[in-house]
Image (cartoon, rainbow, N blue to C red; front, top):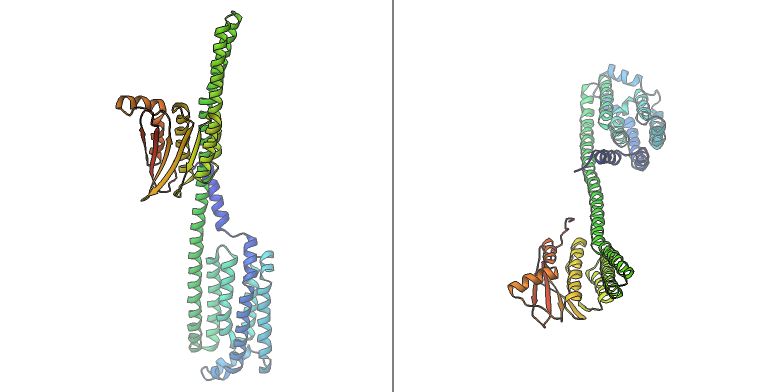
Length: 437
């Protein structure tokens, strides 16, 4: 569960990621300038063709009064029509090119400035108004989607203005030509709205993915923090059980030795000092094993971890371990850590109780079952029920079984007097993240 500060932080991250920054919007506007300019050049040439060749066609479908009304707003010299259309096209292309600058100074100029030019153009070039309305509508739509957060509202305003222009055009040329124009304009509107819906769905999907990614980041941070805390607690326990208790025992022994020395009992003093040396040496060995365990958790492979453990056992207890590890499954770091600790405890038992200086580590993998054996050639022990129960507590086999259970595995022990002991870890070859204990 997340606390209040983490939830607030998560909301801030979600908002910052799902809402593009101003710099990102400007960069996107610059990126789409090229295709939009090419589109406008094409629309300009189409408008020239319509204006120069379709007047006769329009004349056959409208009345004299409507034609005179339409001609009143058109240029008086027909030869100048292509020039005026190209000039208007260049002006619209300029607004597209300088769109990022207009957006930076006044956001409304990005759509307002070319819209004003469009109205002026239609006022003086009504014969090419259908082409211009159909051609510029996608341009304004794309720019509004990219630049404005409330693109739905802007798109509604732009569509309303275009419908108003279509209404004015229909009054000028009649409903017959207006319906033909409306058919084409309606098709373009359908394509634009389809694109807008598709774009919105993509944005929502991206927001969902980014929200999940943010939650995963937060969860990973929590897991990492929990892991560090658990590891620190484990180190504290290990040091308390080894170094702290060893030092406390040594201090008590030395205080007793001092007391006997003051009394002149040198034999008892020497005995206590010898015991203090043994206690200190044992605490030193245990501390080295603990530090080796900490170092091994940073290694990524099981052989590298076990190499550190066997080297520590050799230096501390003069027990040489031969390692033959093959076919290791793709275990998680937490699984490798638990396996390493089982081997560490088993080899420590060998060093303390087996009365031998040789041990063997072997592994095998068959039918998705991984087996790891710790074999010693020492004294061994009786496997009878009473003796087995006694040796289980003495060798710490209960702790080994608990660690094996966390791995969904089992520990088996085979031993006989004067024939050594074999401790086998059997577990599935399945990768699994273990919970902190």
